[in-house]
Image 1 (cartoon, helix red, strand yellow):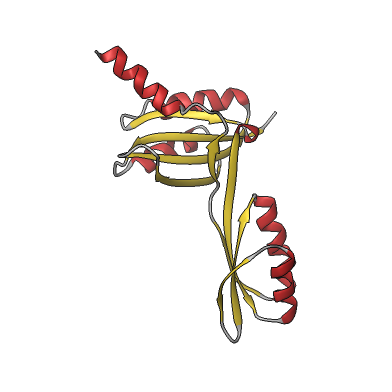
Image 2 (cartoon, rainbow, N blue to C red):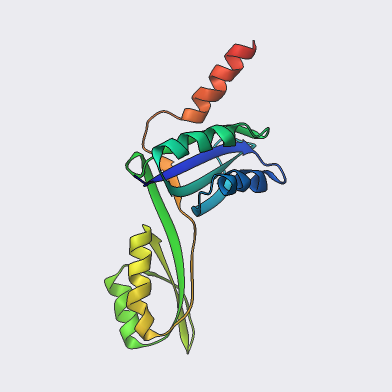
Length: 172
């Protein structure tokens, strides 16, 4: 049975690594639902947050293949209940009184107001940002974009730090 998984991949910031990682998904016929990259809390280490929907057998094989890439330090798999996750969405909407009421009712941040449009920001889960998009549709959504999911594990332990410490201890 297919489930949602959040894969975090830690690596050095190397040219071409994203292409190598996405090839692993393509070869296993797994679609990437969301992908974000950023610096991590560890200097010099970057973090990929990749969301997929697949079955448990495929996810384990997938992560093992990702970890075989030279520049990948470590990859971890989580289920949605093991992480705190958010997305950000931007909406450019025709300006009207009804849109301004929706903004107040849905705790949306206003980024820019012009005579003929308003740019809004909503942070939340995909369901939240999609729901607002659907509510705004009748009011004239001119542009819409949603980021990929970002996630932080709920565990008190920092798994990458533990992994790097173990690796350092075994090389001594």
